[in-house]
Image (tube, rainbow, N blue to C red; front, top):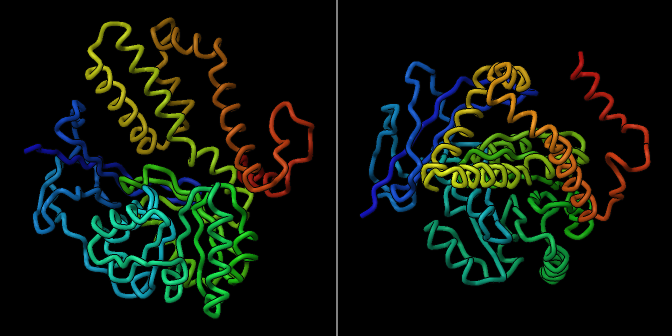
Length: 384
């Protein structure tokens, strides 16, 4: 039987652009060779969400490396807020199941209030098996008809077929209530597309990222004008169960967030892969190289959060004159590291615009245009 260890990585909450990050817990299986970093027990821990393994007993309790005891059972939903809403998920892929897992484990919602639908029946059965009590719907309309919030979690290439089917089924059964909240986590598709197809008043467009699977994601979202404050709070509660969440007033930021936080984990994984391969090339066994790289990135991110310093200062602090780090930085700069990363982010941004049928002729090397007014305001606020 495999054993597993759970790590709570503590750090102080810090405000960054009016958002808070309140703690972290990571878990790795024993078959992984990644050792748990040491934990500073003197640093205050404010639990943000714990990733609990599905394979653990629902009644068991465990202690993390900081000595904090927690139960692996899902918490009871809290009164008020999202607990009063019925949710439907259209699409039951990894992102949808990550959201369901987060809201159930953190006591935001109970499974009996959740319906799921997917054209792949095997995916629906898998979701229902993973989250006992979740209701499986046979049709799109069946999933949506009684829901207060409908989370659209299909692939971008399937969104038009899904919306057409939803519109046809809704028309045949008298329509969906106009107060139903549609929450899209589909990359590139603007708010207006969902309003025109579903004929509802309230639509949310969100961009989560893959770390939501361990409740350490970052979700940027926006909503249609006239959105009730209470409903905004419920949406915030939904995404807050799977990590950090940031509500933006301008939808244009969603395509930017797609390029940075949405696709960002892939950039990090590629960097990790390059560093690990370099370690193997030098002579490290692969499992040791993985251990070095993963713990280095983990510790560096937490150090950046806890220190409150600008990342440039942190980098300078460890770049000794004439040292190994200075030599490495020189080669990265000579190879165009910053520009390559920047170009990758701009490419992702342009592709997100294209998926939404928008003009993607933006960014460095493109025809110069005046900065949009919302950028100018943000720049003024940033420079004080």
